Image 1 (tube, rainbow, N blue to C red):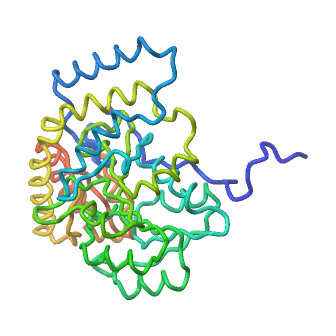
Image 2 (cartoon, one colour):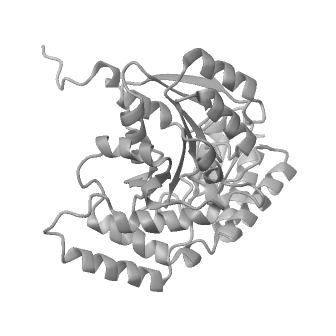
Length: 367
């Protein structure tokens, strides 16, 4: 009997990646995928709609495959996080930071090369390695989820990875990397790439700088971002990076032709024109995050310090039971990270009130 379909051996039996995606009827309070709970204003929606309508009139033609206008706008936005500025040739974008990461590994990793990270961390990283036939090596974080530089340096020197993937803030823990750690690891990497994934960078606490400040000093540093989180644009799928222009040119070799549609480019440009509005609730979400951390600790839970728009908390003897008890009360959180921990995205004050009430009831029920 034939083995059909003839899937690659390492993919057989695997399930596609994805968090539970339930309807609002099933889970009225959805706090599991770190979305911004505040949608765009009617003015922003109107600008996006008008921009898409204009793009629609050109859909018989291929889009600008180098998306020069968008790269310039992203460079201007990123440049606000560094005194050195960012130029368009340093910027690349794709359909979500997921595709950005995949393109990085396609260009700079692959067969005979290694990618490395430190757990607990973003669960998609090993899948990028798998999909590009890159050997995957994972180290560990400390008890408080910080990074031990001695351990990291030893692992890098032992395996000489082509790419190291480090989120800052880390997902699912929310832990940010200090600048001296990033600089030290760039030096240890030699010609290998250190990718600092700042998907949640806009939510970092006051005084925590962005890694884009370090780009002039380290040619092997790559900083990735997304418009899915702070920009409230998860449905548009736009991720981007900043790096040495030579690194960007390498990615251009592996990207598919016209990978960013004219519609995607139009939506992203319109959103960037409304930057002040779309990022206007970031301070509110930071405050709600800090209040959530404080409340969880008051309840006796262990909580990771967070620079993101989510909080990792525990430790539960049976986290699955707690997760289900929350869902039974209409609140969906994420069962992710080390055993015994759960992650809650920061929502509106009303959503967080529902979360607190549901968790109180769930833990009383399980105690």
